[in-house]
Image 1 (cartoon, rainbow, N blue to C red):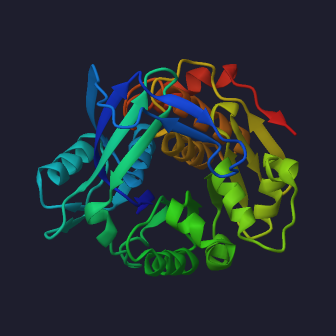
Image 2: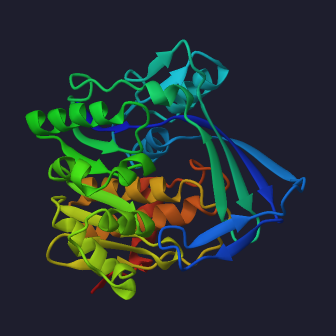
Length: 335
């Protein structure tokens, strides 16, 4: 029996660092309020390039394992050097790899991460590769207390059905950080899965997109930019706890009674890659370990604050002792 199984992608990442990017504010576009731009037709040089590991399932498993939980990964890689490197890295991190599938026909997923050296903003060019063929089987993912579900590719609707069955039949608690494809499908297609979700984790842009998919909700510009209003509306769809991150502004947690808020840690941001994974997985780990939302929120903020100070999604992850040393410095507000 695992403490937690993570489900989603696995990638080999190259991080390309440049000081040539410009952040462009586009507040009129509610779901794309900032753009990272480069000169058209230019050749962009980099003095720093990093080779790392990524993918939602692997990133989150790395946090769970570092925090002392027995974690397994359910993902799919190719039968290639990158796939073997990913499995080797997971094993060295103390993560169970028995549920990893090998694809003979497609290459391991790959990401090019372009980081703006001035502020750590980034864009990711992603090739899903073998992750598109992940086959989720209820029996394989049922021997666990928790499931942490990240972005699903390929035939994701069937995968969600299998996860939903496993959760209902085995009383597994589900933490869900949906991917872009799931968010785009809207409330109507996700509601029955949200009803069996213990903790839903989305960023502000994703929360806005979900709300906009429900034509019965009429919010003006100020209301739809209000995280508290977003969280309360999404909570009505079924998840027991709604978590909304707001980038450098911090994160909010709503359990139906209280809204908790914590600002981000004011440390230098080098690379925001993996910030969401490191936050969400640490929050869930903190909740499992302490059974307390305030502590859980602190875990998430502390861990993600460390990860964005390093290049790569899995660098900077803290262990339990390192997180708990910083708990006393954290402030959580009740709104």
